[in-house]
Image (cartoon, rainbow, N blue to C red; front, side, top):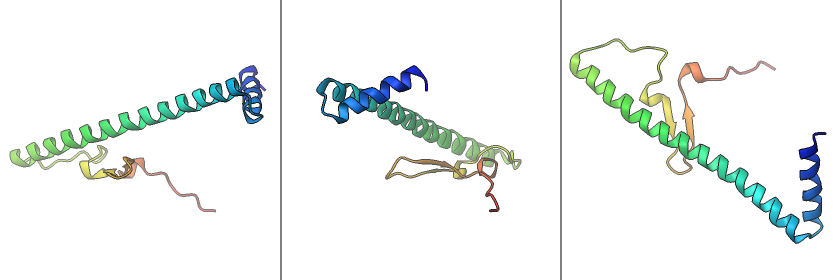
Length: 103
């Protein structure tokens, strides 16, 4: 077991036994982990909105110019689903789908 993992386990055990400083330290670590995940999700959400806006403008420009070719490998605006209530982003383009296993 790596030393850092052993330290974390020991600190969690102390926190579970009521040790105040250990509880605060564990709480700080958990909050930092959750903040990092939240920040990554917010960045993904921002990039998804920006991509959809740019892709929609590009699709409109192509329609105006009569350009009919669409790169089948490039995600289209409708391939990116954003759940406005949860902020979750899903890539629905066929190249991003994970094949199902046949168990």
